[in-house]
Length: 234
Image (cartoon, rainbow, N blue to C red; front, side, top):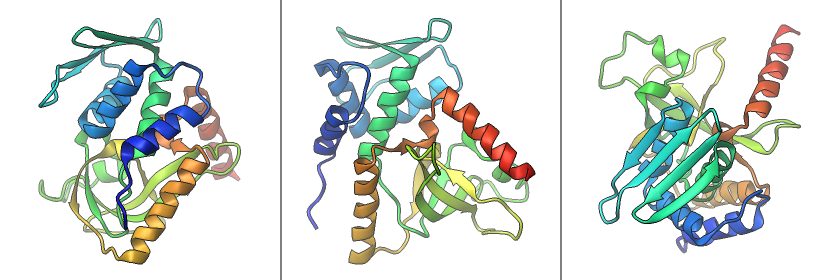
């Protein structure tokens, strides 16, 4: 099976998806850098999520990237060498979501991934009996689940269970986003059927112009939580 060129998919997504700001050559270059070096993508996302005022990273073969956040003005300034890019916080969130949708890998069922310590779900935080070696490990049991309307422009990247414990009766499924994953420690079984299905999942997400729930807008997140709370009471 021919390898998919991430840059081709990325340019398609940035060109054809609804977006409210111009994709300049500098923004496209930034997007390609985040595709090639996921530490830029996840670092910018996690800094924004935790409201850090700045984030910087020095890739191996290029100049340092700097992200400076102004949450009161809802703006971010990004620089690399002489290059300067200015976006709103919401525009950056959308850009990160599109880069993630276009270029993030989709791991096979049964894969075990290590989650970032600062982003562990409550269920994992409560597992004090696990050793440091197993801390933060989850096993993937489902992939790319679309939310119901009116939130169907978002997908849950993965459903997972704590490893080595697995699913427990009465527990809610654990939702895991690409942005929570630090590394993959074990790849689940794959064959041509699995590879074809993974490609189909990715193609369907691109076709539907869906981004991960990790990049939900504040308004959508509030409405989704209200609806979920309402349904849980019924």
